[in-house]
Length: 508
Image (cartoon, rainbow, N blue to C red; front, side, top):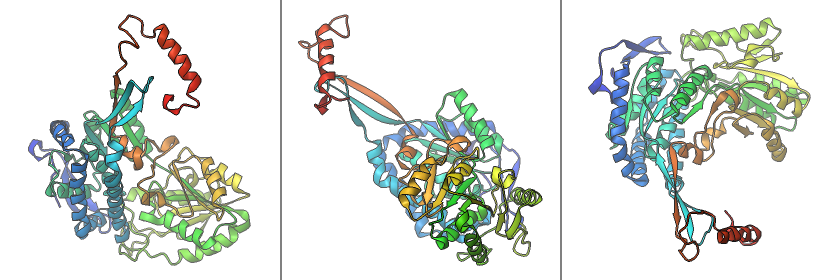
């Protein structure tokens, strides 16, 4: 494991070291050295100097270099997966999922990025003699503050479109899981992407704050509390930014749902990465007519969940004590207020210091912390509702709005209900499916964030549009003068307005 941050070695001054802990053993797997403000400044200056040359390569050349990098990881995945698992304690399958999602995201931008960034011709007032061209220009240096729960996926799904758009990148990974980002960046350098184009600055909150002060664009993934501070400072600096923040995501199960599918989807959605995902299913609202049957099948199916870190295991370790204590606190609060445990509720120290049983709470209500706030653990709460209207009302009874889910056989009805849900995305009949859809934008409403990753929106957030308007109106039509709208032009405007409804070429 590297003991120093990739890309800032030349300017590094001695500062405090931060140990990186393997949650499966509780022992350190290495250390990082926190970057100083001067280190961050130096990294950004190098990135800024490298940006014009990187942008000048052109979109297709940049994509070719990124594809070479992705191919190298895809064909030799084990070193990356080893690091992800050692840093996070997640299952091997969850680590592979990170690799797949990033690879699939690059595949989307490989085939669509050039078109999305191509200059566009737009109509102006007089289409025969005037036209406009819209060009997309990179912001410059993009900064990334990335979290520990998906240290590869949530870093590189954002870095990829930023680089394709012509920006250079400076990444501040979580100090809890930095080596995953180091490995990914090191492989970028080895496959031909210049060292100053992608750099890492290590450290905790102070390093992130220093990065916000320097970059031209900031992408942050993390808690709502920190996201507010990032947004406030970015707004003061008048730089564009995007935020993917916390969630407390609901799943609605309607009476016509395939119960076996709904049960499986609930457990997958709630227990992926031991529940440490902003898009985890945390609240399940089941129509009363099928509630008891749903619980019976859910309890039986949950017994099949296996704890461990292999490809065949379902639930890995929590990352740190904070998540474990919060999970226990939410369970205690709910039980104290009248809820009961249907499944789980205990630590599993026989497997590792931070393993916790998959846990299902019933008899819950909206006064409980498990319903009101994000848990970030292997815990899901289930409650009955009278009908779909009550389900949607309760699903929206939260300050969050990141993701949601629905189970129904009537897809048209499901779409109508989904449109009533306050969330950036809604998956019908398969939770978390948004991660397999890189063409579709994802992001939060309300306190779950601002901006979108993936899709055209996820690429174009990393560029600024510049419009160039061309005027070729001949002198005989509009002679030089001191009035912008001559009487003749005013008459043309009146005629244009009258005829544009049936002459499409006159429309704006």
